[in-house]
Image (cartoon, rainbow, N blue to C red; front, top):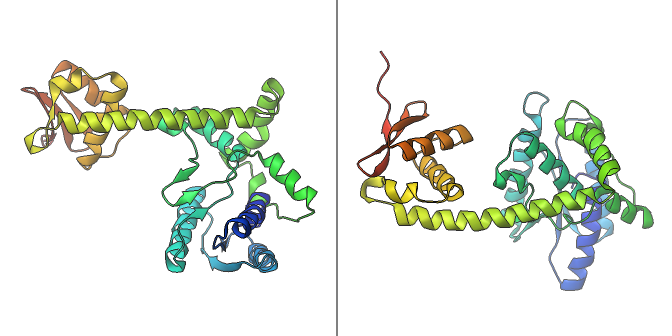
Length: 290
């Protein structure tokens, strides 16, 4: 819990559910250490949790400003939440992501050329993490808190235009609301849900095809792979590269797919080739450069 509107609303709503369904609910507030005010904000969260009769835990992440801050902060948050979950014997971690967060994520990923999986954005549940507020917009969350006269904190980093997400929030999303109406967040969130469902179906089919095409020695049946529909073939090649210990990106997948279709070989990693010969697809070491 950060003390922001989304987190405070999550705490209140989950507290209602805990009483109603006899759930054991505990609160975690994390101090990223990036602003002088953050320690006091964590103390406010602890106080609110106590007023609701909830056990609460405050932890410091000791982050520093610099490159990749958003990604580093995200990994640190989830690692700490998972550590607390295990230590306290809890089943799930709930976070306060909203439909507005989902819309921002979808726009960011589409702008960067996302695949269907990427366009799925934020999942309602992934592993032990659930996101109960994903169908509600940020405005709806704030209206809920205003109605109950509950205070929350606005993180000034959420207004920092150095971050792409903030530029989308302040520049692109308002323009889309003007063009398509105030429900644009829900429409983008629904698109993400559909993309997630479609991607899961394709993944299941691709996993079945991967197992079916496996040959002794770690190779794949080139003829069978060549006759797969392209969306399935891309996913089979991606898994083949990952299990071979290679980094997977769109270029490596498309280069490998072209080699399969042409019965040749192609560079798919710094020192690796995907070779399609004698009806088999294999990963082989690239020849040493002289």
